[in-house]
Image (cartoon, rainbow, N blue to C red):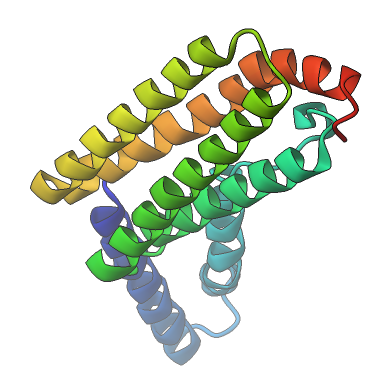
Amino acid sequence: MNHKLRMFVLAVLILALLTAAILGLATAPGHPLTWLVIASLVLLPFFNSKLSAARLVHWKPEYSVGIESIDAQHRQLIELINRLQNTVDYATGGDYERAALDAVVDYTRIHFRYEEELMQEHGYPSLQAHRAEHEKMVAKVEQLQQAYRADEDRALQEALAFLKAWLINHINGTDQQYSEFLIARGVH
């Protein structure tokens, strides 16, 4: 379900529960159904918040590559991806969505440049393969940015799914490989 429809359904559900609670209090204040409706109305934001939080990416210690500057950048990428997720979950509008998507893309480029410079400085033998993986990822994200202009809802969902999976796979895969090499050369 796209985020605008989800927000609409949530708003209609809140309105229906609120109406039922008011009618229940006016006609049968002691009836258990009235209090069940009120409890549902009170708990709805809590459950919505829990569902939204479940869609976020959370930093885990096993994501650490052992190099604090890179770990900090990975945490920043997770924060930016989560900000993009929040723009989707809370239907913040096109300007915020574009800004959040652009921020992820821009920071990803900065992060890749930093990684590549560090690998080059220390003579990492698989730099070209890692750089090719970065270029492939940037090309995919640029493609998703273009798709966003054509179909915002679908493209944002696709971008989020891709970014979350890619980031975790990249950190746990190729980033773990170069980190051992860099740590052995004194990079912390």
